[in-house]
Structure formats: C-alpha cells, structure tokens
Amino acid sequence: MPSAFTHEFNTPAFKGKVSFSTGLFINGQFLDGSDNTTIDVINPTNGKVVTSVSEGTPKDVDLAVDAAHAAFDTTWGLHAPGAQRSILMSKLVAIMEKNADELAALEALDNGKTFNWARNVDVAGSIDCIRYYAGWADKVTGQVQETTEDKLTYTRHEPIGVVGQIIPWNFPLLMMAWKLGPALACGNTIVLKPSEFTPLTAIRMCHLINEAGFPPGVVNVISGYGNTVGNAISSHMRVEKVAFTGSTLVGRKIMEAAAKSNLKNVTLELGGKSPNIIFDDADIEQAVNWAAFGIFWNHGQTCCAGSRIYVQEGIYDEFLKRFTEKTRSLKVGDPFAPDTFQGPQVSEIQFNRIMSYIESGKAAGAKVEIGGERHGSEGYFIKPTIFTNVDPSMKIVQEEIFGPVGVVIKFKDEEDVIKQANDTVYGLAAAVFTQNLNRAINTAHKLKAGTAWINCVNSLHSNVPFGGFKQSGIGRELGEYALANYTAVKSVHVNLGHRM
Image (cartoon, rainbow, N blue to C red; front, side):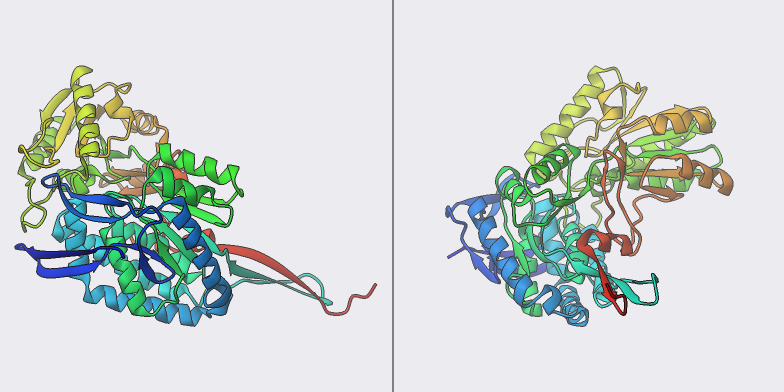
C-alpha cells in the first residue's frame, strides 16, 4: 500500500492541510512500484526531505501501457465521442480551479518557485490550457476531397492510441497540462512520467482526474528516473508516440530510443539560448524590466529565457546601469513570502551546474557586474547574475545554463546583431525591443527561432503555437497546431459507381 503525503502549510501565502497518496497511478488506482522502492522529494529551500513517492520501474510502465490500451479499446478513443471527452475535461478544469491554491503551494514546495508566480502563471495557465483543449475535443475533423463524381473521398483524424509523455521539473503542472490537453482532446490514452524532482502536482492531479470521472486507464502517471521509466516509455513497442520536454541532450536519447524500437512518432520541446535584442530607440525602462523578467523569471530555469542580451551601442551604458539596478532590486528568498521574486534552484544538481557555469565565465575573463555567487548558506539559492565583457566562444554565451545568469553584449547595427543572435545551435525563442515597427518586424523575421517576441518576452497563450527551430525541438505545443501531434490521418475512398 503506497504511503500518503500529509503536510500542513502555514505560510503568508497559503494556509491549509494537504493529504494524498503518493503511489503510481495505474488504471485509476494508486499502487506501490514493482520493486517497492521510493524516491525522496527534496525541499530546495533547505535541502531536506519533504516526502517520498513510489518509484516506478519498466515493469510498471508495462502495466500502465496495458491499462492504457484497455481503456483506448473500450472507454476512450473512438468509444468516447468528442463531446463526452470535452465534458470530462471541463469537469477537470472546475476541480482544478477549486484546488488552485493547493496546487500552487505544492508547486512552490518541491520546485522552489514562488507561490504567487505558481498561482498566477503555472496554475492559471494549466487551467486555461485544459479548458482550451476541452473546446477542441468535438472539433477535430477531417475533410472531404473532390475527386470524381463516382467516388466519395474523405479523411478522418483518428487518435493515435497510447502515447507516452515525459515532462520536466521547471514547470511541472503547466507542462503536464500542455501534454494532457491535446492528447485527451484527440482521444488518446496516456502514460506520463513527471520529473523525479517535482512529482507532487502530477500525483495530486491524478486524484483530480479520478474525481472528474475519467475512465480508469485513460491517464496513467509513473514517477521514476529517466534512465528507467523514461527509457521504458521511449522504447516501448506498444507506445505509438512519445512527447518530451527537456534538454536537447536527453531529447536525442528519446529520439534514438523511439527510432530503435517501433519508430514511434516523436515531438520534442528542447533547450534554448534565446537572444534579446534591444535597439537604441527602445523604451529603455520597459526594455530593462522585460529583460530582467526574460532571464530571471522562474530563477532562469526557462527554456526560452532571454539569456543573451544584445544592446545597441548608443544606449549600452545607460541600459547596463539600469539593468544592474533592476537586478539588485529583485528579492531572492522564501517562495511563500509575498515579495519574493526568485526562490531557490530546483535541486543541488542544478545549483552546482549553474555555479560551474558562473565559475567558467569568471575563469574565461568575463566581468561579473552583479551576482556571481550563492545567496545565503542554506538551500539552493543563487544571486541573479549579469556578465559583461564576454567573447562569443565562451561557454556562458554558447551553452544553455538554465539558471539566473545572463550576458549583456554590445552591438553596432542590425546586420551585426542578427548574425550574432543566430550564431547558436538553438532556435527556440527571441525578442526584439524597438519603437520602429518596420525594424521590429524585419528583425523578427530574420531571427531563426520558433517564437519571436516584439517589446515583450516570455509571453505565451494556449491558442498560440510554441516550439523551436534547429536543436530546440521538433513539432509544436499549444494551439491548433498541437492537435496534429496526437492524430493519425486516414484517407477513406468510397466507390459510388465505378465498376470493373
């Protein structure tokens, strides 16, 4: 019998008690893992164990896949009309809204992000995403193609079947919603692996899914490690599609496993090293505020973080002065304190990785304008950091740090900055700040990135597609575009009179 997590929150942001099973969620039930082992969940503010959750194994993935197939063949897929799927998804939305503060508190507890950001962005965005795709569930349709008068030809957009989904630790609930939404709307059944660092909201969502009345086996959640559970999902012969959000390095492994097994369909949302371009004519106050948000929001643990900040030479000195002052004003501390902007990094592993990049920048001769060291003596806090005097070959310029570390680089003109901005293996996002509309649009069009923001950053909507160019991924999340990831197109030819 799996253990339960019980916790009393008594914080300025949220007060309340939570209690729920932390087992694997298979076929609508919470179970121990096959090996009866557990994974410790760590509070990143102090490095102490919060609770333990059941650890899944490849055997458990087999059980989950069996349950998902049984549901697809009997109670979901083509056996559940889109209108029925929409009703259940809408019920889930209502239950999520009722439990929004609890979900935000759990997100802050094991991830370290602030309660306010979790409540107003992660939870709100997750609810909006599921609601958006609930609206699509009965509108996934094919087309009729005109061929000849003695023939009827049409297409059906059918659910793929059992799909595997592997989500990251930086936006646990939101990434779960991004994956569940289109998959459920299209009629697929799911085997999902949350990050071992941040499993609590995914497990809590399983209780809400049961409460909403989804048939057993439609959604299955297996907590576990990437090299066991993640690999088992990616290489499973009865999983027809896998969707992954995470690092480019792991994305390669997912793609390789998919190719070596049953050549399953793959969508990948991977890393980034996004340029943020600020021209001389930009509203400098707004550019400073957005640049700080672009790199330091979510502790820099954002795939589309604007980590390369290019500033035109005419305003470089003034921008750097104001940007440094803005960075100094950002409060780092308790995620549940109402005035905290940045909490701890998610784990000791991530903390050490970021600090190694900071040391690399110092050793390479870059100048630390502010930050560059840990904050406090407990937990995984890092001061927001700005480097200048960098060289394009430095690791801190080329590689994704995934932390609160940005580089500020001076540029001369549009041709110069576009060349620098595109000099990366990534292509997830980019931003342009200017009050010249022609310049803004022309620059945005020349940047090799899946998303280009003009006079804003990190602005996402459930109905707008998101995904990368180059090594930042394959396919698109969100919007109508994401539905294509979860349907198989069948062409049907009906002979109305042609005789042999």
